[in-house]
Each structure stands twice: as structure tokens, then as C-alpha cells.
Length: 126
Image 1 (cartoon, rainbow, N blue to C red):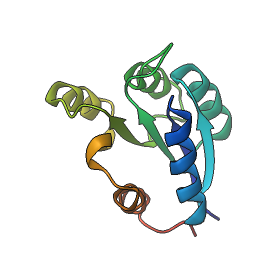
Image 2 (tube, rainbow, N blue to C red; image 1 turned 180 degrees about the vertical axis):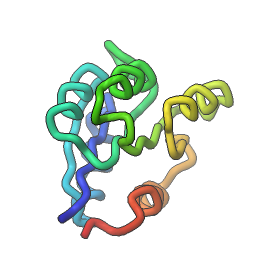
Image 3 (spheres, rainbow, N blue to C red; image 1 turned 90 degrees about the horizontal axis):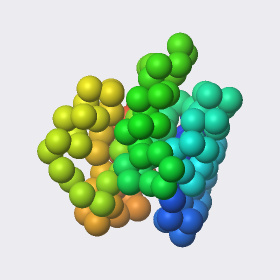
């Protein structure tokens, strides 16, 4: 069974690029363009991993995660945060919410992105 990954990114181009790359690796992907949509999808689909942008319209990645962590079966979901800024206070806030990894968009290649996903999930898409 392949791992299910929810990609939360308000930039459509980026989201599509990441999604296609993950699908090429054999992962099942779900997508959301903001935190509110991500909550609906996550609660319904129960992904193995959520990769979320921090700064998004309607609800930030952190607000989404705080809401998600309060749901009974969503407190153990692995989360990787993507940010335009690698700020220490963001990382501290994320650690409290169980974020396992931070990716600073300007410093991450598509290959780095895939490697991090594999590390976090502990395998390929199989």
C-alpha cells in the first residue's frame, strides 16, 4: 500500500510540481490550496504525511496544524512544514506541534523534497 501524502500549498504551480514528483515516486497524493481546505481533506482522508506551507490565505499552516492536532486520530500524523523564511521562532512553534522537518522553499530542490519525504515516511512509495 502506498503512503498517502497531503500537500497544502497556495501556489498552484508549486503544488502541481510537487504533486507530480511525488506521484512519480509512487505516492498517493491529495492536495489543498489553503489551511481550511486542508483540514477537511485531512480529516476525511487520514494522510500518512502532511506537507504544508506556513503562510497561506484563510488559515496558516500552524493554525491548521493546531486544529488538526486537536482531532482524536490526527495527533500522530507526520508533518513537514514548508516556508519562505526559516525563522527560529517558527521552528520552535512547529516543534511543539510535532513538525518533523522544515523545508525552506528557496533552499530546497525537488530531489531534496523527495528525499525528505522518504526519510520521514521511512520508505519509498511502496
